[in-house]
Image 1: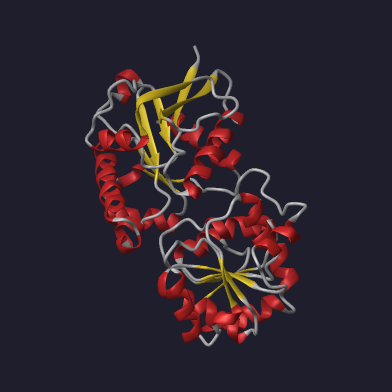
Image 2: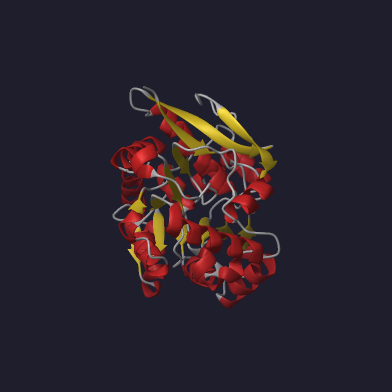
Length: 355
């Protein structure tokens, strides 16, 4: 008897990191499928679901927006039962019988912004995510989060009990600096020497202050349209100066890898319950990591970088740009081995076997 795990392929109209996670995990599930198990897809009409190795793809009659609305209301006609895993909250969370019919539905939640920082998201996204988590409380067999700190916080938000499971994310398969990295950095108008800064809101000021203290240019990654003016003002407040700040928006994998690989260090300032995709990628590339002390950073970076309180950020960056650079580079590259889509997929298979 063949066991089929069906993955919700959510690639259109979603955050780029979630789209990459969906593809990476699905490829991992295909590569690590136990004997007698196959992976199929469930995709909204118009979604890109061409992932090599899928046994089949069930294309729903509705487009992504309509599917999201229908599933939010608990309408999942035509989806069918069996084992269903969604790498996001987009899932047919309806009543099912796991005991007698072996139906299972699991979902993944990569961040808690809709609860902790709703002002950073469109109102419609906040409403939808909160509604889907309520459905997950009623109908999900497990809710996966990528770190123990996020799991603890989610347990405070939703009564999920032991249904919360921790399975980490990873960098895209084969993520590495491309052969034309220098050209890509030139196209992005990056300075010769710089530190990459990640974060959210006013936390960027800490990163800018550290860069100014270290006499380094700062490059901000993943900047949303309309956020440039606020970042420039924060740079001025930190005495970095607008002329030493570069702002990069959402980049494709080669350009993002070129930017990160060219950085002397990555400074992560976030305290949010968010999976730090850029830190995972930076460690994969062997770039020294300086991260503000937080539960997520302690979970993810661990001993793969310098996780320090705000007051020590300046000195930690100076060390990373000087005598500590090689040590942090080696530690980060070693820590990166803890994260792969294959190992994450194996844990998803194990979860469904346990359920």
